Amino acid sequence: MLNDSLAKIGGSFIIAGRLDEHFRNRKLVREILGDSIPDLPILLLDHRPTQLAEVSKTAVNAQFSGHTHNGQLFPINFIIKNMYELAWGYRQLENTHFFVTSGLRLWGPPVKTTGKSEIMVVDFTFE
Image 1 (tube, rainbow, N blue to C red):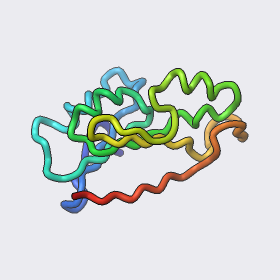
Image 2: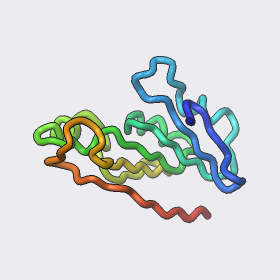
Image 3: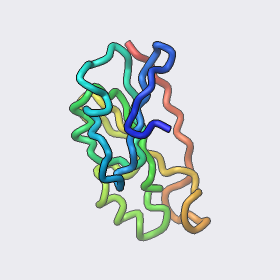
């Protein structure tokens, strides 16, 4: 588990993970990354798609999030869209790419009326 920590993956990239936002002692992204800016690409895993502006001002190249289920049930999808800056899909802020998936329908009632189940596949090329 990458709880407010990071790991170097074979000299190719760094993957960092954050504690969920409901933990009061959760570190800021810049605390997890430390003072040095690495030469390797940084991928961040954050359960909820929050604090996008903060993350976009760091060396993080891409963040992956979920939690929202894209609303899962009507009319919750409208509430979720107002709760999160990016409730589902893709957005780039500064030099950081943000991806939020609607997940697989593994939470709550065993139905989805909004937000289809999905597994996101992202291919990266680092220059």
